[in-house]
Length: 267
Ligand SMILES: O=C(O)CCC(=O)C(=O)O
Ligand SMILES: [Fe+2]
Image 1 (tube, rainbow, N blue to C red):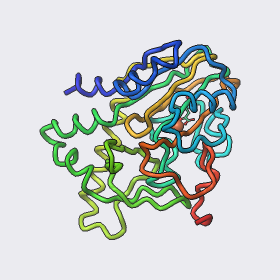
Image 2: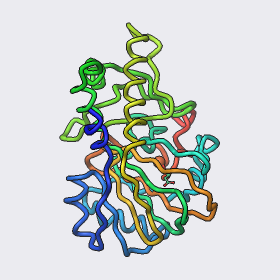
Image 3: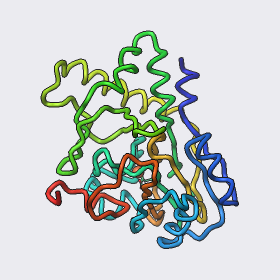
Image 4: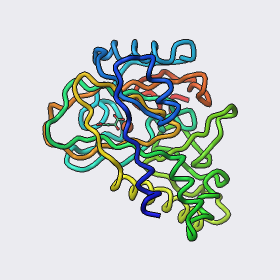
């Protein structure tokens, strides 16, 4: 099973031509483009070019250094520890963005490598496992509480269907059984298996360094991303979230590429 776990890590291919991205996004769930400018507006423009008529929303970019500049959970980010694999934008509840871009303005020479984990393969791994199969099969059925503190409510299964062709997986900071769960111990075990398997896959996954001038494009419905610790505080990226026609929906809220507008009281 170790081999199957290692196979959950994704090392994206690097290309120079926008036209090469779409097939790679479909195959691997991610790709890196080298060449286009990496500023805030340039990265939004790149996203618009990639997703073209499928684009529904591309909010302003967010500066990323030690967590997103305006993320509410930024106090939990540290350059000294790894950022574990996660889904972006879950503060928007079930309407999290289906794609995200990270464009690197300044990379660090030591550490800071990126990691991508394929959520579809994590599900398959759990389903195929003699002891964990029950959890692998429960992921699409059991409604849990995936609400980030003070943010948009999300009472939904860890793995969902978007209603047309896309499967959505999610790893948030604080997935827990619903208050009215019929078997909260079982639900907690399922959640722990999901999170622990992702963390174990993270340990074994291939690393890649996002270098200045490179932009990573991630299918945020399929892959979870994280990065290793680093020291150089000048490391800086722009993050751009994208909602396309493949998304479950676009939040009826002001949007940004961070969580500043996802606070529940704005409902
Ligand atoms: O620092 C990184 O490479 C990724 C940070 C991250 O997870 C994000 O900005 O969404
Ligand atoms: Fe992230």
